[in-house]
Image (cartoon, helix red, strand yellow):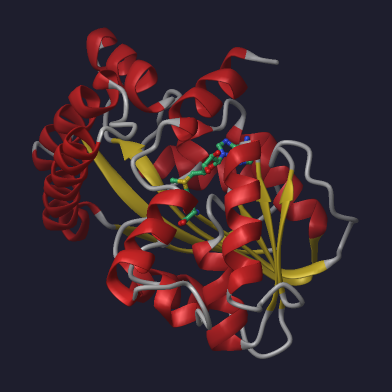
Length: 277
Ligand SMILES: C[S@@+](CC[C@H](N)C(=O)[O-])C[C@H]1O[C@@H](n2cnc3c(N)ncnc32)[C@H](O)[C@@H]1O
């Protein structure tokens, strides 16, 4: 297993949001887990910034509609896969590297009865287990930052898209290279690979054969969202400490605090890129 894969597994196996935690919250609020609907999960299972609205923006960019065949790169617990299947009537396949996330995603999907239209398969987005020209849209949310060779992942998106298909994704960026201690902290705490600026990202996407349609700087939008998310992680950590359940590793909390500072300083940020094959 590569260093990148084991670091991603290490991080996501200890992540403060998991299938078990989501189900425990729902059991606590509803008293049981019978008859769960997709929308019961949505307040808990969207592991990206801006929730469902952010996914709607990507769906618009990627022109997702009823019957669209969609691949979600780095699907995590499958929140986006289920949402696109449920709200848009799309047929969605999520590709996810971490086996525990795949199992968690499959369990959540089965519990809400979406397993026909929403699948999560174990795989690496640098070598996608889908045939050439087999999807209409590829999306991804805040996950290429973990991928050691993003150009290869984008080339895989190009390969599996039909002619004129759309790629729409959000990701972390760095307006200038991070200092060595910050880069190390991001790697140790959150398995973050070296990042790039928005112009460099656009060049990377175009070098894979795409035409970039739009590149939207999300840094200002993310600022308040990330502060709130940091507060949520701190609350979850305290709840976990009190309940004696896994609290997430210390480097994660340290790196998240620094990440939020770097966003406020605009040394780091976010982008949404929409591109056509
Ligand atoms: C921030 S989560 C995103 C989850 C999901 N997109 C969402 O919005 O709910 C990033 C996910 O990317 C996965 N991942 C990281 N590197 C990957 C790779 N090379 N191939 C596939 N999945 C990967 C991680 O295991 C993790 O579950």
